[in-house]
Length: 100
Image (cartoon, rainbow, N blue to C red; front, side):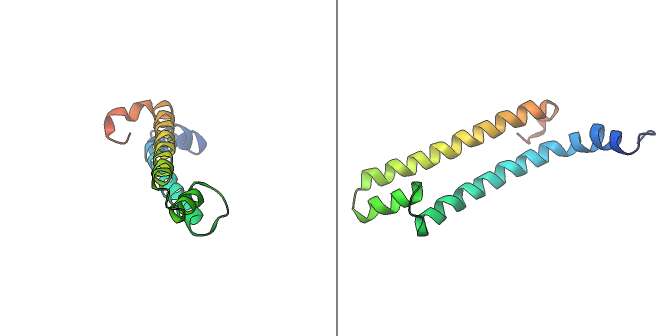
């Protein structure tokens, strides 16, 4: 707009305007992917956090099951914190927009 065309318009207007929403999409996609990985490990993987939960469940070791559930939650939370920090670094202008 205002005479800007092509790549400068894309780089200076469109991408910065879309970046906060794209970063929220990354955070949501990561949450879904993390849940899918754990669910897949529960069903049929020979190793991993989900496998450990199922293994210890079959052995009736409930404290270990809950320990692995806590580990899954902590890893997911730490990854979300990292993505939020990246989002704040890449989009400082969107801080008060409710997108962080």
